[in-house]
Length: 98
Figure 1 (cartoon, one colour):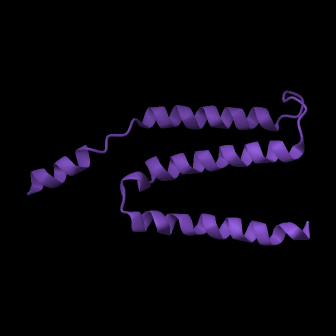
Figure 2: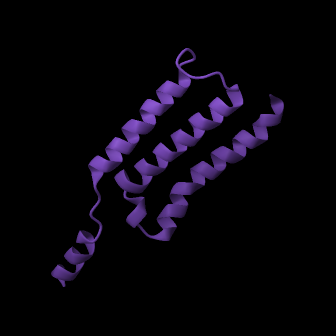
Figure 3: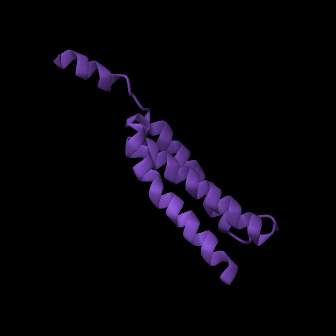
């Protein structure tokens, strides 16, 4: 029995260094996109959208691999996604006030 449960855990080998390099690359891109002198002239809305997309990608990588949500049951994934859905809802409700 013990060897069966141990074999199930060995199936989920993750290359954490690859995830680290992806996070580093996304962080460098975010910093470069935020520097006004180094980045090309493009609309602030596009800049904001790019920064949000890169931040969500980084959060997804951290959640999936470092918090081990990729290998958990579907219910735990839903529990982790509820704050994201609530945050998007609040932003969309407050957006008309601006």
